[in-house]
Length: 117
Image (tube, rainbow, N blue to C red):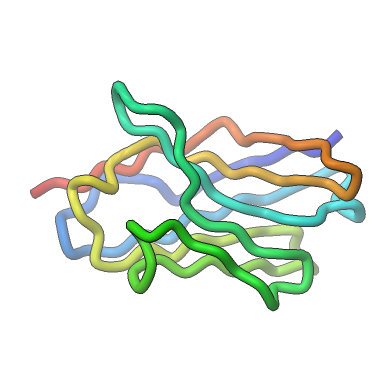
């Protein structure tokens, strides 16, 4: 089992920045990828960004490329999402996701990000 605790969400004006954090505990030795997804009201959950175990490989949704940066600190078992140049359409609940070697997937409780125009 892996437990995830997210933080860093909030209200920000368009063009502003926020940094999300997700701290993992439990079977963290077995964590493969860490990532972020988001779900806006009335929409399905969508992929935002993902980073592999070493941090050497990252993947981003086209909608956030060049604005968001994902990183991880394996010593702290934490993944971060630096969000710059935020837009109103980035408003959503952001969820942390962890995938273990073997394929098990875990989700955080979500943190609200609201971008005002």
